[in-house]
Length: 385
Image (cartoon, rainbow, N blue to C red):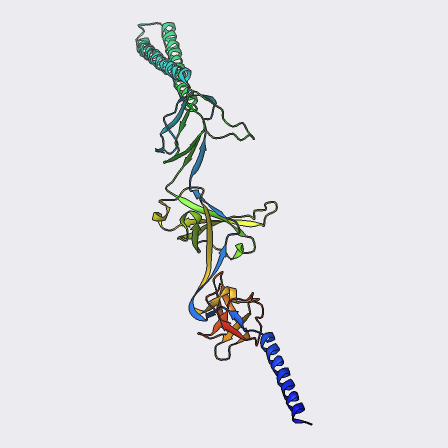
């Protein structure tokens, strides 16, 4: 082989090797960029949350209407007014009933006076009969005259009793007319705020007929007490008990949370068409200062705290697969290791680790990245989301 041919072979071999190295370099698996979180000690809670938005409700809310229909004659309230229990809200036209009350009172007074006069006459007749009975013993009067006086006294007594009964009946009639008058007046049953008024002065209001809903004349809300009612999935409901602590969050207050406790669990499962079956849970607020700026109708979410483990090993819940697998990143070898763990309680944020991990180890949270598998090369890129 000539020297020229030898060099040609050397160049060819070197060229092939360079091409192979080039192809290997650009086709080799690239390290996966991953985001990692350290295994740490901290608080983990087991919670149950509502499936649909809950609602802030007033402890007392009354849809009020007069018990009879009529024309509004007095309307001295407006929406937003604070009223006291017993305050007049609406008065219907009732001059006829007012006059009837006055008439019935006069009749009752007259009946009372008539009864008094009749009873006085009965007393006089009794005394006269007693006097004649004594005189009969001395022979000063006849027996016939005495019998007539005794009988007359008994008649007068019966007339007195009838007059007294008639007076009582007249007085009772006053109560009936007053009751009819009260039906034309709408009175506040408790202290509260006027939330809504349906009707204006001189308009006619009609009470709701049976089975037909009509708007109330006045909606009264007690704004000194609020609670939250929220639907919990039927699967989670059996774990909830009265008195359990609750966190309440409302869109109106951003990330601020309010402390509460479970005060009632519905006694039945609510079955709504095309929705999951749920159980309504009511939550009362613990701190009175928290309700100062609340309004009935706010949407609210609740988290019922079922269990709490303090100072326990924890990792982000989104780093766990099937509640038993995680991927651990080794800084020294820059490789990924699939690891089996035993998980404890968990919530949306953290999962407790019973066994399988140690504090300080790094778990991968970007599990949706292509190439995440046992033994794969990786590099940390925590700047990515």
